[in-house]
Length: 243
Ligand SMILES: [Cu+2]
Image (tube, rainbow, N blue to C red; front, side, top):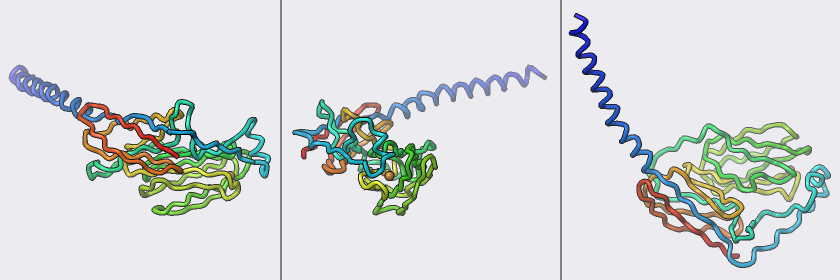
C-alpha cells in the first residue's frame, strides 16, 4: 500500500521541481530587464558667486556656523558639476500606479538651513520634518498642486506630513528666518535622483523603454532630452546649464 502511494507522490514532487526550475530563469530575466540611467549635470561658464547669509537676527542660528554660510541657489563644484539638480523620467513610463516607499523622506533644519537644500520624494511617501536647531522654525511649503500647510516647529519636535500629487518643485520657506528657503520635488513614480556635489546622478531600476528625461534647477530652469534604455542595459545623459 505504501509503495503504491509513494510513486505518484514522488512523480508529483519531480514535476513541482521541474516547474520551479523552469520558472527560475523567467524571474531572473524580468529582473535584468531594468537598468539605470546615470550621468552628470554640468555648469558652463563662471558660476555666480554664493553670497554670505547674515544670521545675526537669531544668535542661535549665527552660533551654529563657525565659518561662513552662503546661499545655495547655484552650487557648482570645482570640476564644473552642478549640485541639487533634480533629474527624472518625465515621459514614457507605462500608465501604472507606483506605491510610495515605506521609508520616509527626511527634510532637516540644521544651522538654520535646509538639509538637503533640494529634496526629492514620492507622492504619498511620509515626510519627516526635523528641527535639529536650538531655535523655533516655521516650515511653510508653498505648493500649486498640493495642499498648503504651515507649521511652527519648536526644537526637537517632529512633524510628519506628506504630499498627495506630483509637483516639481514646491518652494519651502521659514516664516521666522527670511534667508531659509529650499525645494521639495514630488513624483508619482520612483524614477528620479538629485545630483551630488560633482553633478552626478543615477536613476535606478528603470524598465526598458524610450523616455523623456528632464533636469530641473531652481534658478536655471528645466532641460529635456530623450534616453532609450534597452533591456538589461544602462543609459546615460549629460545636461549642461548656462547662466
Ligand atoms: Cu527657521
